[in-house]
Image (cartoon, rainbow, N blue to C red; front, side, top):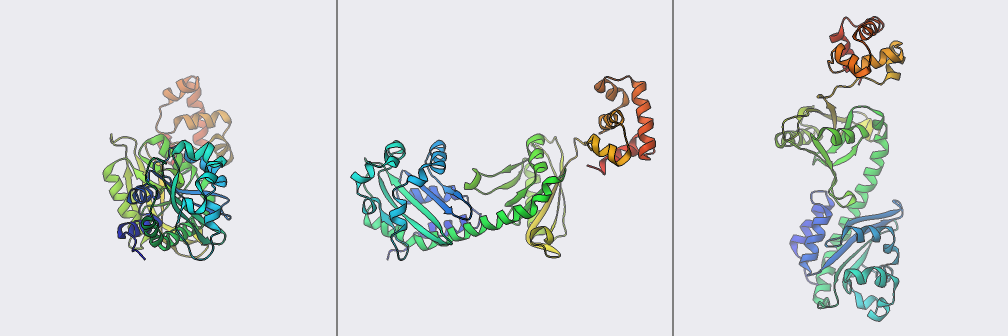
Length: 375
């Protein structure tokens, strides 16, 4: 049997490990076989959906249509999946004669619009009812795939199958982790769980808000399920320092530390505090979770007071006193707060005296310290 191209063998394991986006691997596979387009996805009954790994050179709207509808009509998948025995690479006309293929709804409404005509591909059994279809396509005007090309793909199938199994396990593990981390969504501070390689397993809503409002970092997924989610600082120096600290903490070489994250224009400071992830958050055990780090994100440029309900519950503030307290957050003067609230400065000062008495703060600076401790 022909040996698989070594570069593709290496790349597919890089994709499985999260070191390379699956879309990039798919592009390399398409180029190696001289295909115009390609598709690789996983159907898993446990996930109840399509995990689209790669659709090189397929427009995004066609990819979405395939995920939503046409994958269930793909006439190449079922014959290849029911071939029996070891995984086998097929040429499309072996599975389905061209005249039959051209009469299908899939060809009339989808494949013909993309120029899918010649195919070489396979459907890999990943176990547990999960399958991994993959196909490389050429239009009718191009030469059909040859037996030699089929054998090249055949030699790669064991590696593709193993990579698909690894991907499936990672998806299952990350789904379980998200369930365990769901409580972090209730926190007002940004929380990100990352692997030593920088992959984001979970980001709470506060982290997503900070990414959207501060511009200091992004939570980049490289195309949703097709890529690898990462926390990407906008400032280059912050990116390098954060990556090194996350790797060291996840590997157990560091107890943690802090990194300032800024926009490229040096504004909008976010503090990123990296610490070992408590194992009880990941698997219910004690100590620190191996291979993971917890990144706590706090916007230092825009301090915010707790909401009015929290202030009322903690200190017995009236709605008016809570509104003044919130308006003073961040060092705002009483005059500015009065203007923002439509009150007179004298009224605001009266509310401030009541707030200081109820909270026990010695002054506005002490009140600011107290508010900062209650995000």
